[in-house]
Amino acid sequence: MTISRELTAKEKLKPLFDDPLKLSFGRNFTDHMFSMDYCGSGWHNPSIKPFQPLVLSPAANVFHYSQEVFEGQKAYKSKKNEILLFRPQENARRLNRSLQRLCMPEIPEEMFLEAECELLKLEERWIPTQMGTSLYMRPTVIGTEAALGVKPSNEYLFYIILSPVGPYFKEGFNPIGLWVSDTYSRAGSGGTGEAKTGGNYAGSLLATREATQKGYSQVLWLDAGEHRFVEEVGAMNIFFILDGKLVTPELGGTILHGITRKSVLELAPELGLAVEERRIAIEEVIDEIHSGKLTEIFGAGTAAVISPVGKIAFQGREYIINGNQTGPWAQKLFATLTGIQYGEIEDKHGWVYKVK
Ligand SMILES: *Cc1c(COP(=O)(O)O)cnc(C)c1O
Image (cartoon, rainbow, N blue to C red; front, side, top):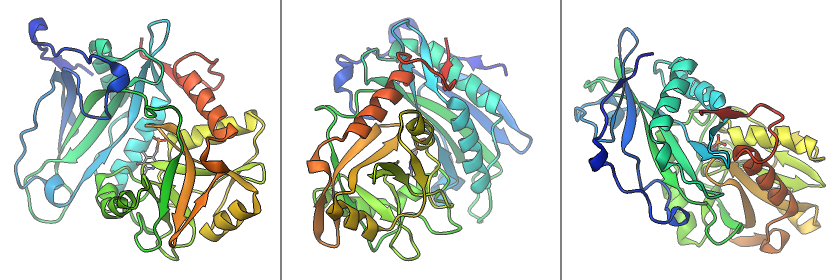
């Protein structure tokens, strides 16, 4: 792929962040972006250009019928000054599955990876170096054709923007509180729950607002059919340490295939923790918190990597897990995963992708 380049003049480059540890999530963007167009016959015009607003018709598909899919990834700087990605091939594959589901054209995996690598090499100065910091990447595809008839767009835009981010946990590795919704649902059988698409988030905002008004940071979603089986949290998959085993809801079409989830499931047995993927009812969770067999709950996703859960609220009652403290398995999995991501622990699985 030949990527055309229109670069910002040196004297016009943005000043870097003052303190990378204080960066808030997704508010600052680097100098350049990648973009590529699709019209009928394939992807064209790959280019790297200054970060800039998009010019779209108000009739563009994305504004009316929401053909939109995205990915969330991080680039890390190792102590050896390498630029590292974590399992980016998995993101390329998942993006294509999301694209298929939304009736959008796929992007060849090599093209996706090349676009990311070229943009990262150009924007290297934006990758913060402190442990816990990274350069968040947001590849996005939208339907751009100006047509109000309900049908898949004939034109698309793929772009990648980059945002330097600080550590997810600013005051240490602190447990969050979850509110279990027994009325709203995130995804139904046969729907788009497995696709990383903005529409799933739009539908979740009202419930999330109720959760935060009640003092909880996110919603723990139950299945849409019975409001009984645990599915996932906001932008994270959910895990339980139950009877000394790692239990997580099985994927069944409504749960996002998290790459952190997949990695946790592969790592756990090597750390001596047996895993079980199965349906888990909210009553079981509550009963086992009472029985003392459920010792930890945590979320897993790219943003926080591992996010310990200290309390859950369900039907007007609050349940405390592990004394609202981070448990040993959350700690261990967090340390192992981040160690691999920053190139500090041996990468036995070949998960780390060296950009340079
Ligand atoms: C992105 C996402 C996740 C986590 O996936 P990772 O690949 O681990 O970052 C989980 N749930 C939802 C709904 C998501 O959008």
